Length: 313
Image (cartoon, rainbow, N blue to C red; front, side, top):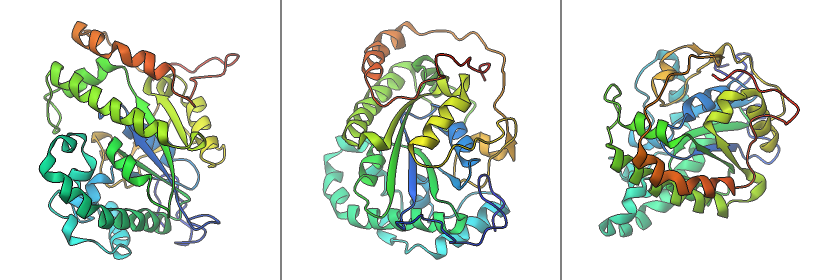
């Protein structure tokens, strides 16, 4: 079938794709943007029966049409055939349910209630269709919005696992201020406000999710010890313990992601560490979150105490 990362090209579509209970396991990577969700998703997508779907919050807004790649289009065309698209969700209306900032627009509250039933129905159909077409038991969604995760918690036809991913706030704020990427640019103060709102909602959503189906992950731990972190995630979600070759990871056919997915393969390996200018404002404003994050459980450790960690990537 599809020669995508983590999916056998010789498998038959739908053969055991959703497990014994008929429900796909969805690994939802939640947190702030620019926190390393794409590389984590790619690595997970190279594991057996795990499919990296990318940022699925864009699926409804684009009516299931990816932007580039013949193989990508062929895969998502099959997915579209199995999902009953809801026209009322077109035109970016799903952002009213997913974006944190929509909570402050009282005019959209009634519309959010009206759209919620269709949104949840289509979301369930989408995950199940992806699992069938990819012949996968696990689907990785790196949309990262906490409000989207909150909506997914109500779905009964999927088994939701939350991966709360955080990165050094200095790196996130610096990345949000870059002008060489197509995404919107944030100043330091706006970026810190964004992190505060995102983390407030993410912690609330994380805390209400069953402990056996949630994990707190630090991006720096993943880069320093990818085998340990991936192994812990795979065990937590029942995806076995077979790790991929981290020196040659196929990016597959995710619906949307950052520039990383434009390459056919990527590698996790040693990189030159560059000195990063630190923002005193970010240090002060984000300091309290270190205390909060240190209390979140269960958390993924970088490596076992008696096991040396691989070189940082």
